[in-house]
Length: 503
Image (cartoon, rainbow, N blue to C red):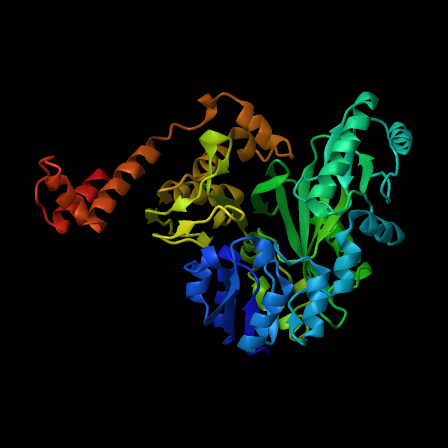
């Protein structure tokens, strides 16, 4: 087993991996940029090494600096988390050359699955069902027009090296094709340094369902159930759950077997995710493979009882999977909300700044994976994900009810967050009925606000938070007296009693 692991990441996922290391008796090493010097993952780790300026290219994406930190610390393995270098085959290769174990798949597997067109070619040979379309990038508008005519409109243009909706365009008619192709190619070049764009038949109102797989280095591969990821904004997942409301045991078995076939065709090892599009008739099609740990992995952990980060580390250390497929048992239901530092009232723009007060949810069935703390300043330089709040119950209804209760307990002062959005989603009749597809959230947000629940609780939380802040900041009263506002001199105990009365 490894003695020391460097986590080449930041935020909640770095904290998550550090906790797993501590449980396994492994020392953890954090890395950080200038603006992350006081970040939670730096405070939690056994050791921490400075990388450089805030810009990711000079810190978290700088392979030589990360490997230099690994060498100085004596780390014998690197966990990449998700994002940043987690799906970069050059990084995996550089780790191997430096004699440091990369906790993830091989560089060859990443290269095979990293390009969507290359992955489609391999999956075609493996007999995996995928959405009709090209398996190579189109080279001209004329070629694109011929393919689109054969497939039938609407069609989808996608960047071969893409992700997160970049280089993606829905085309409804032939007169839109030229401009859409040029825009997609230009955006793909800017985002990924690769302008290759391919075409596939557009599946209208699909569900986005993915399957978690695990593969050891001894040829054993298993699937761990599906996650429903259809609630998205701008092609970015917002809320995920497991199991999916529409997947029954037979469909799960068929999807799982296809996912295992995809992983084996790629020579894949460690944790990975196979993403599918599912049409209205419940036909599923291979979309892509994510060659890393997913943001939404906690819902799988809760419904399987397995620790995916522990298993990632054990697989990378050469151990065999400790169970067979028939021993994987799913129980209960889990739903995850991604808590972002963004302003719902201002087009979800990022909301950096200092967290002046933090009231945390707890109670039965609640898990919180977080990278923030009270007093920390959220930087503008990175993805605004702050935390993940997960509700677990014996069934979907209980999981949702627990999550609503926990969201009503959650308060982040000093910045804006999207917590109110999740209260709206979880109280929506269509969500409760499981009527989801990738257009669901756009439809919900387009409706007048009258269908949102009255947020009286938010006002109560704000009042309680103001009282708590007064208790925690004794200078408040002194400043009030100095300003001549007549604030009475009372003890913290009395102020605490007033806060209790507010509840």
